[in-house]
Image (cartoon, rainbow, N blue to C red):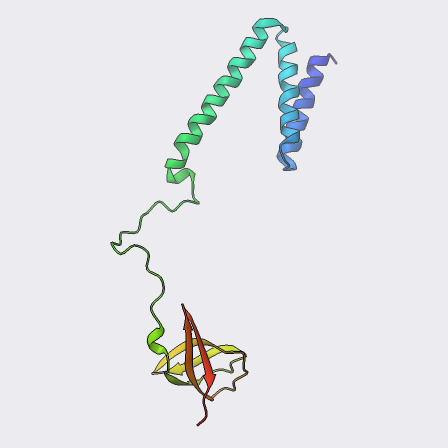
Length: 157
């Protein structure tokens, strides 16, 4: 088998390996290099073959550049981008302000070890105790609020 066809075959094999075993592109780059060398020799070598190969690679690069610029703007080609915008004049709004719950008393609906659920003012709230184990049915008081986290302590009846 002539050397140019050996290079072409090696390039195809290396590109197939790159498709099956994803890596850092080593097999892919080696495959492209082998195919380029093989194509250069199949076309007879010389300046004409070099100009044709450079033209092909330049065209290939322009197509990739065009696709990189155009495709991200089309949602059908990029399912990982949320294309709708939130129409809210206030901007981002976090969770509701829970500081009004401070001092409220409630009853543990589940065992708090340390997280669980309480019933306070007719509402079920997910809470954490301040590290204590609190039995189900125990009276508790909300003593601390940090963002969306509510902390309770056992109260004496």
